[in-house]
Image 1: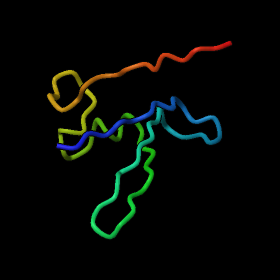
Image 2 (image 1 turned 120 degrees about the vertical axis):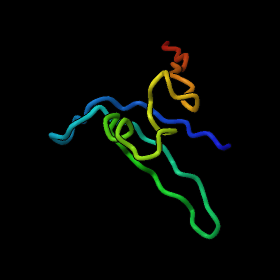
Image 3 (image 1 turned 180 degrees about the horizontal axis):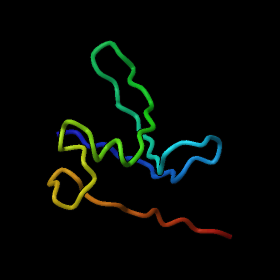
Length: 72
């Protein structure tokens, strides 16, 4: 099963929209190049396919990881 890595963006700073948001690329499929999507965390919680729910009870959800960013 393929995995999606999503980047947590937090709340929108350019529009008055419900957030926080995530961003990810769907990946190519057949003759389509894929697309970039920006769902809210709430949208994923309500997704019809439970494998997209970002909750600990979901065996497909591997959690949140923080990149180790070094500042000089």
